[in-house]
Image (cartoon, rainbow, N blue to C red; front, side, top):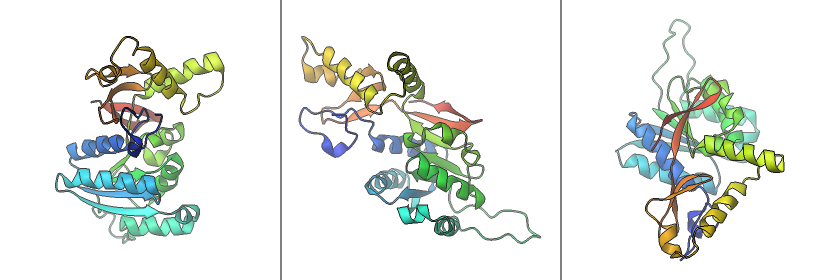
Length: 251
């Protein structure tokens, strides 16, 4: 199945899609390893955001950390004044006395942004404006924010993102363009992954092959399939630096 919804797993059905829960665990653990203990979550008000918020909270609480969560509805995101006021309250921002130029300590060590690139681009500039940008605390997100527009956004310089190997994706996209022209559809790489797996099951025990502990080197990256139908992908952590995504840690 091309699905990335872990609830769709079933007997002898394996999910090929990138499971967002794994990316959340990866980036939160990265933050914890750098000392993060007080985290906030800014998320879109949808099923995706609620599910991944639970994963992040559970992961941080293992270390005794604390989490504050704010969900932003579409109405909040589409009204700049409402969004500005929400972010202002969320940040705890207060106007500094002109005689005191020292900023107060931020309420959080890090902020996890759960949403697509459009969501991140709306929220990030306001976080920086209210003094909790990546120059002061750790800003984190997932592969949904791996877009050129994110890398070029000044208010995200120094932020961190968990994702599969973006060089592999760029290589696939380049090959696709040369053969077919245009941009590769979102699910096209998974189609090649499926074809690769199917072609290699010839004269083999399918379950043993798919769940091989050595994993598989797929178009979308190194992947291990579990007997319960879920997958684990090799995930990297990238930092936004000088308009590019620079790998800082691999697993």
